[in-house]
Length: 294
Image (cartoon, rainbow, N blue to C red; front, side):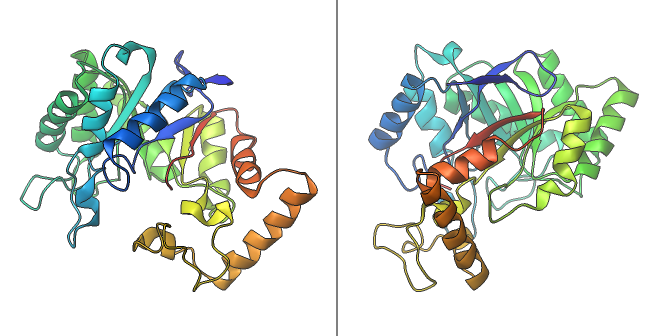
C-alpha cells in the first residue's frame, strides 16, 4: 500500500480509502466487519463514513439513521488510533426543523451523535457533506473551528463543493483566523470527469487534498452491466439504486465498452483500469479514492 499526505497537512493516509456507505444499508454487520478487516490487513488506514449512511437512505424521504457509524464504532474497538477516521455532517438526519444543514445548532448536535456512534472522543477529518446556501459560511466555519479547538475534530474538509465555494471558505477562514478546509470529496470516475475542468486544477494550485467518491461509477465500471435492461438479480441496480440508474445511458455503455477494450489490451480487469486512472490523475494534492459500494 502506498501512502500520501492529506493536502498540506502532515497526516499520512493510504492511497485507497475505504468508503462505508453500504455498511448497515446493503450489507449486514458481519459482512461489513469482514470488509473492514480485509482493508486494514491490506494496509488501508483511511476510513470514510457519514452520519447519513444507513437504512434511512432508502426511505421515500431519505434521512440519516447512522448504521454505518455505529458498525464502525463497534468494529474499531481497541484499534481506533490505528486508523484515520473521517465522517460528515449536513444532510437530513430527520424531517424536522434544524435536522439538516450547516448551522451551529445542527453541527454541534450531530458531532456529539457521531462521536457516540463511533465510540471515540475525536474525529480525524470532519467534513461538511454538501454546501448549505441557507447558512452563512462564517457561522459554519466558526463552529468547525470551535470543534478543532475543543479537540473533538483534528481536521476539517468539505464534500461536493465547487472550487469557488472552497476559495470563498478559505478567504473567510483567512480573514477570521479560522481552520481551513484541508480536503474536498467530489465524485470522479471515467464516466464523470467534470472536476478536471476547474476543481482539480484549483486543488493542485491551493494544496487542497482530494478524496474522490464513486471511482467505479457506482458499479458501471465493474463491467457487470451490459445495457440499460441488464441488471443482475444481486446487483444494486436490481434493488433500485437510483444514483446508479443515472449512469444508464447509451453514451456511458459505449464508453464502458471502449475502456474494457483498453483494459484487455493492458491485461488488467476493467475495475483495475478504472481505479488506476483515478489514482494516477496528475494532481499533487490528490490523496485517495474510495472503492466502496459506489
